[in-house]
Image (cartoon, rainbow, N blue to C red; front, side, top):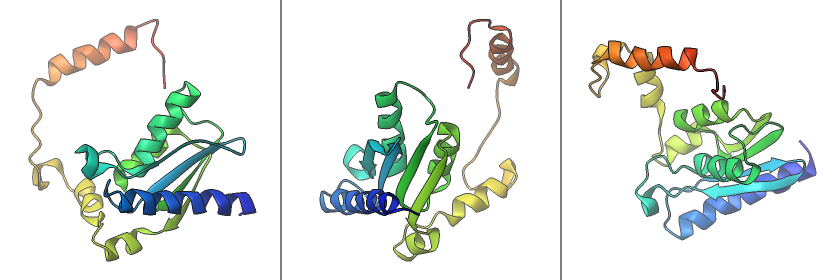
Length: 158
């Protein structure tokens, strides 16, 4: 950990407080850095935008990708005020940064009623016993599009 890492994390924590004070959403902030420069930042905006996916990391990832003109965050580092939830963790892995720093952990988040443990439990359950009903329909038609993707010659793979 460097002094710059501390500065970027301090900014992420500051964004968490800023978003909280604006009643934008929960107390979470995120900064994305490339080559020592902040390329994007964000705070949780779930309640202010009525968007359950508007977590700080997702907001910052979207902005960073737009700024950099790419769908992957190669050579980027993410600084987030809290250990990412399962959704944000998935977004981070799809974005492929080189490293993630976090301040609070998921136990700290659970202590203030942001507990995502139930999601990890749901992921491990068979689909048939999850708390939200999932039912597969029209698989043949869906697979047809997947087969077209396989044969598409001008696709951008990721």
